[in-house]
Length: 232
Picture 1 (cartoon, rainbow, N blue to C red):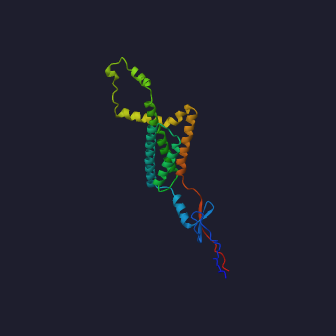
Picture 2: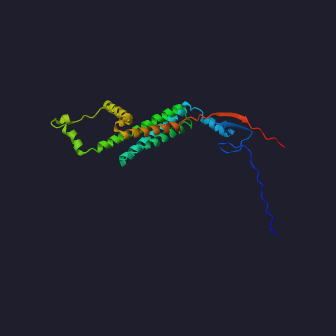
Picture 3: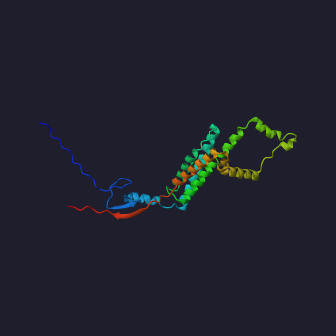
């Protein structure tokens, strides 16, 4: 006689589930952009929708500045070593700086964080044009450099000596060089399609920084009480 096999009966679980963590929703629930979520997930959302305090924002600014500096150094080193310019790195820079600002501000976002992330990303990206200019200068042919020497012929040795710039002149030089770097994306528009493409990529990089630090503004409502099914 064949052995009788018993199968375990399965009953459908009609308990509502949280759309975020998929856990069963007890008597109390919230709604986030029209979706039911549990109280635990609602508390997490509420914390992320808060505006960062001044201390948190300052820490986010510091983290973002550190990330921007590392991105600038890394990209500058990459250009100087390989001689290759990769414009799409601007998007990665925007994401990295934005994430650093958000992490420093305890995961919070908002308009201040967005402006800080965009500004720091712009500095990191545009300052990368400085090593590009240095590389182009070093690539000049001997004849091009000789033109500078030719201009000094016939002058006395004292006239050929270039005095060492003082602190004030050095500061002015740094300010001028920084200003040129900040304007380079727009000055490159004279280069035609390449300049336009570079500006478009820069826009996407800054947009990435803006989106990463955006405040969660989805509508959170509740709490609501779930109606218990009638007991037969």
